[in-house]
View 1 (cartoon, rainbow, N blue to C red):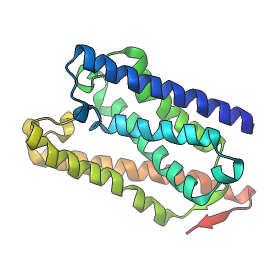
View 2 (cartoon, rainbow, N blue to C red; view 1 turned 135 degrees about the vertical axis):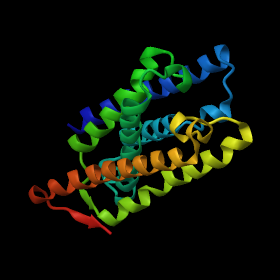
View 3 (cartoon, rainbow, N blue to C red; view 1 turned 30 degrees about the vertical axis):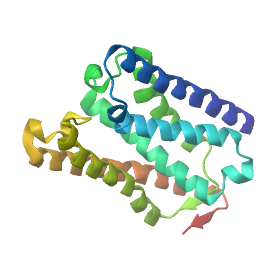
Length: 210
């Protein structure tokens, strides 16, 4: 099973990398893409992270893969890419032009395949260590930093990556409501990631990461 897991991670990481590069080069060639805007999409950032986690996970030894540090990072990135998939499904379907994901197979890989596979990989090939629920509060820091960055950068460049973060559309009140909702969603994804591993603890000997 370990060889199967490594092979799947390698294949999915390569697919994700090809999708990101294809989307970027297509945008540069046909849509006047601004690279700083491209890398300001949470979708792109979270997909870059999951591609990295899958690629590294395919190359690490079993001991290194199950190290507490890597599993904490893996759990955080799984949370972020799950959030990307859910937010797309709930709010952004049909807005491919605005998201600069007009190539169907690229859109499928970045918004559906990788989020689903990341969850599958976490559940099918779980960490040998338990993760403390306290740790998941650290995972929210990156999305919060992203929100601050987006809201500070937006007025300077007159551009926002997502309509629910654009105060020019419905004001900062709506942005606040959207941000609270997504924060709760991230926490629920974190609970899923941490809680799913704890549910398996009864049948396996584990050491909790404090």
